[in-house]
Picture 1 (tube, rainbow, N blue to C red):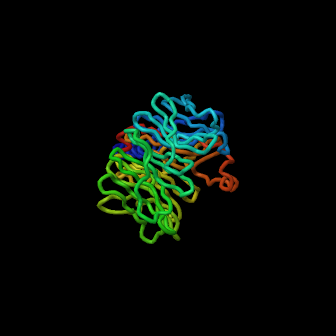
Picture 2: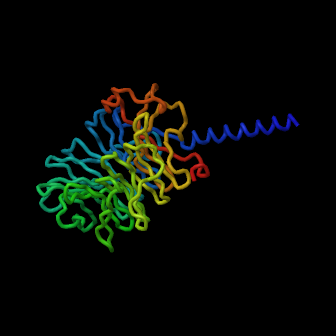
Length: 364
């Protein structure tokens, strides 16, 4: 009898240890590298695991738009204009087209990179002098902001050219951050002293998404093909992540253990959300799913890598996550950042990482 009990206890111990190890290794992690030995800031991942971003010096200087495709040494520089010394790739679609911005001798301009790598200037709205692109869908339609004497205005660009997103009369400024494959656009607009998240749809037009109750402002950062919108809402209590659905309106994303700061940055078509939050150890990257709710991504990667993930910026439908963080031998997710690191975010190189699920069964 005692031997039988011992065997059961050993079996239970093995199961518990296996579950704990799986929880710590749900993702493999790949450092995307750099173009010049400085820092890389990734922006968006597509369905194939290809990444759009910017690589440059530690302090952000000499940034150059870059594309990463599938191997640690496959970060490549994107084409730019002859007179340009700075560019960013901010988004990528499933066809491999990318959009972003590139400076010229005149000003910053929104640009589109074709699948062949050719760069195209998207121009500005009438009367404006500069523009920036932030989102692209699988039809190659691009959204962003155009700016000039009239302020900042959200735009959508198609093969027919650039037009302003229709906003309410009296709007002081607006910018578009994302567009899905149903041509729904999200962003933020300011009509008076307050800035609110908005959703624009082809059939229903413009909709103010409001704020989390008790808060004052909001901004929308991403939308999936189901029309679910994520972003953040700010006020005297801090900044909190939100999700907006047509049937439920704007709601705080539950279970994030931060009363002062969190921001949802992307959502995929499985309603999985990634972002950043401020905990007792500083800013950390998070994942939220219907199954597991909130989880700090630092707890789901192999230990001992000398990596701290501070922000998760994008997630695709395969569950691959794009995260930004720091990498150094003495860095650990279990220790707070030193005060000089908090005061000077340029004290260490910024690295970008691809997190790939080690097993679909563990992730969902």
